[in-house]
Length: 315
Image 1 (tube, rainbow, N blue to C red):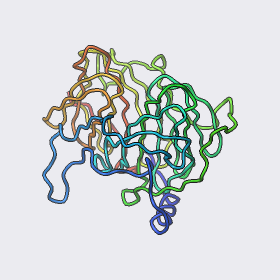
Image 2: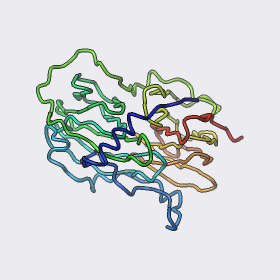
Image 3: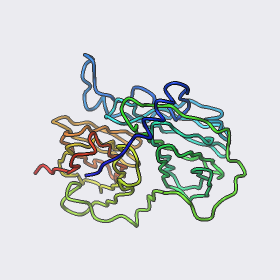
Image 4: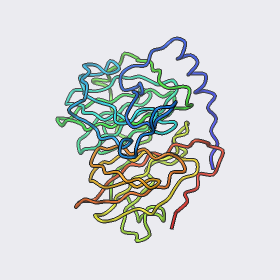
């Protein structure tokens, strides 16, 4: 159980609605796997599962007045599960980046999925981080990233809204962070994806303990209904137990591997770089149907922070 006070988010959102315009990856794009609403036909589970499409990425020469070009596209939009702003996937070439900006009503996390290094900035303090790594950005904090390496960065951006009615809104600060002084030790929270730090799977993730699991980010990191980020690896042939969350929707992002998802009697297939939206109270399980480990990031978003966030395993 956790309680959050979002008055600051509401105040910022009112300002943003009156005077500001969302832009770049800071704006939640529509589409990408939402269930039908307002009389629209209900989507099947397979239709809700969306694969990233690198061939369809749009290129921007200066995202939030950043250091150079990058290309990205939407995997899941704001209707995929309640509270989600979007999930974007893209690539940042050497010299590219995203300039300093902050959001009025959303929290974000930039994740670099491949092995390289990148300069991350939070509130004017910059550090060079080895990747893969994620850097969460609490509500109202400014942030940026620069690819200072010689390797193209495989970039993932996750956005969660403070309130359903406040989506988007950002302010650019006109700083691309090129040549910024570097702190040898980061002054901000980072999310490690080091597999050696993972332990055995929980009851909800499988009873045979052959899975690797770690809660990569705890609820206290966030100031929105964003509840956690879990890191899960399922071996070939492995499956999670059927389970549901009473008040938490989840998005599974497929870092590596392939498999099937079952939810409420339907089954869908997926491969690397898919987004899988699961709403609260939907019974679901994940199976690795491939020949290599299935690596997942699980984003939890609460629909009511005053109620129990218990997981219920279905025998």
